[in-house]
Amino acid sequence: MKAVRYYGRKDIRVETVDEPKEMGANQLLVKPLWTGICGTDLHEYIAGPIVTPATPHVFTAATLPQILGHEFSAEVLDVGREVTHVRRGDRISVQPLVMPMNDYYSRRGLNHLSEKMGCVGLSWAWGGMSDLAVINDYNAAKVPESISDEEAAMIEPAAVALYAVDRGGVQAGSTVLIAGAGPIGALTILCAHAAGAARIYVSEPNASRRRTIESWGICAGVYDPKTTDVVARVKEQTEENVGVDIAIECVGNESALNTCVEAVRRRGVVVQAGLHVGKASTDPMLWALKDITIEATWCYPITMWPRIIGLVESGKLPISKIIDGRIRAEDVVSKGFDVLTAPSNDKLKILVSTQLAAPS
Image 1: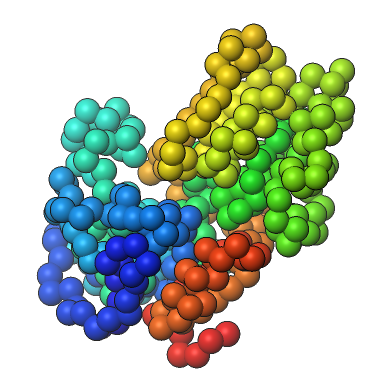
Image 2: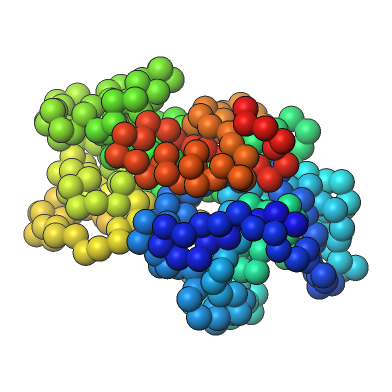
């Protein structure tokens, strides 16, 4: 079968590999439909391996080369004898985290924090950028007919965004700054709006992305941090110029994090959702003077899928808005990874399909 495999920095190959030969009683054989290229995939491509294991993973035993793809939709082709919640022919969205279900964290409902956690498409034998894949029963969430295959592939990144919004405590009437309008930042904007935020401000240096976000008509201000004093502009639009209730950092760099700290009001909340690949210089004294809360996020609770499916089905979370590219697996490097890592990139989310016969 065809599979997109990651070997290391700047080394992704489309290859023919053996089909899955067996699955467990609690596993499924699935046919991936659409798979998103994630920011984590891009980090691996540029500077990895980072989370893809160069030696056998402690829980999954996976190692390089790795079949990529952890944001994906699929059709169920076969199920193990103990699988009861999905059947052959069902369409699913894949929750890709895998972990022991009986360790310290999983017993407390914090499966995503397991020290042995792996991920389909990053540290598991299979991934979404392939003709076939094997996943565990708890990785499969059935989607209704009203949700498209593309939307089903977008639920995983939407979970990252919604978790950030949850950790910030965004609610009806909140004022929110979102630093960074890449794929996760854009989804965080949509999630904050779905949660009832009254005013959403965005800091984003990419002009194309700013135009896209502005076209949605749900933000009170979308600013270029290279030419605008974002903190000043945001504060002047809040009550008594105190700053926003919540600021969510979706970039993974020092400047964006400090902008969030400066823009949030006293007793406000700063959420770190962007992945920082290096250390950042910050001002903890300012945190103390403002008595703020700093919330970090890692992935998401694995129970979020039904909630997000409901939001998408209701129309309150239009996640397909950020899809702006659909490509074949054969073109994954030239039209996917190389495009998304280029300095001139203006794309948000590119979806990949091994089933696609020709570019669309």
